[in-house]
Amino acid sequence: MQRQPSRQGLQQQGNQASSQPQQQDSDYVYFQRSTSGFSKEAIPKATAAKIKLEHYYKVAVEAAIERNKRYG
Image 1 (cartoon, rainbow, N blue to C red):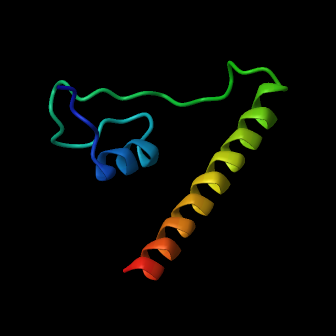
Image 2 (cartoon, rainbow, N blue to C red):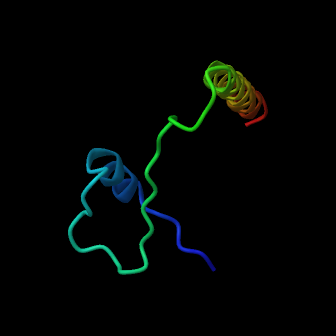
């Protein structure tokens, strides 16, 4: 089973990109996130895909909440 990073670990990772947070397990993996390797065309396409996915799931969750209110 793989270990999932905690929300706090992710926040620390974003806040301390170059330094390791104190008292993490030795097997904790950090990734440097950067768009420097992407082409100029890829970034707007990725942003558009992100917005579409966020909208799709927002609508799906709102529909599920409404459906549960009607039947609950």
